[in-house]
Image (cartoon, rainbow, N blue to C red; front, side, top):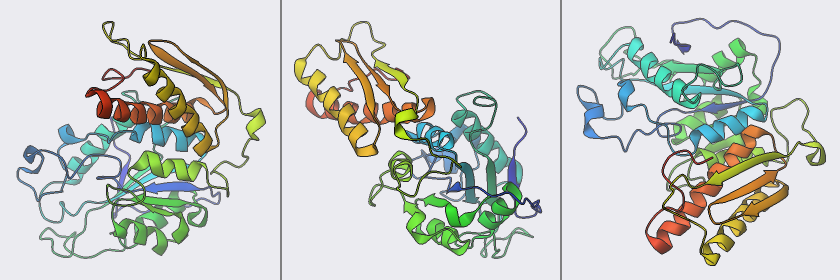
Length: 315
């Protein structure tokens, strides 16, 4: 698949139309990086992910991106790739990793509902301590500078002042602020900050009182109901035969709905599954069920030592 990545040597096109976007760091924001095995760093500096076989999405990322996309936001990845300046790889290696991530985000398909989930992929191959010309220098595209965001805004017709920036490092947030993203619209994700992951950040954005990236935000009463089911795929395991477990699953589902402002139209539980009709579009419903799956699995593992739902896609 041909890459849509853009590097600092390519000139952006202009557009008169603007819309809101979610700008996202790549490594340890949408894909696993720090926790990768040693094999990922053979021949390169630790952290320079240039091997597509190690392109692994973090938990909940696909669901979060789909929900944000459904809400009307453009999605743009901006990533520093100083490994090129250090001689660890080429632009083709970065594009191969991005292609692998793109395929995972799209669910193995070329597109989702006829379009890419992520609208643009930008990377800065520069590093001031590099040894490979012409990348062996600082550059306006390299975070914490906001050059990649400015280029994306011009090329894709985006408005930084209405947008959000999400990343795991302060330099990611600084890049957003430098390019005109409001500081209150910057979110740091990670194990030791307010938002544990992208799904948590997406939840805040989708419930922000200022509205979504859509031109028109539907009134809750006219948002169609979406039916989603979370069920066990293991014929030998009946996860909710226990009354306590069943009550917990329902309580978690209602708690997520209350916290996110989603209306539950219908909720049915039996020994093997939970079926919910909620007042959001399909992609938002996927994010809801991904959060339900995660929260209930964590509870069940703490109390019984095994996850509640089978490994793999249950819904």
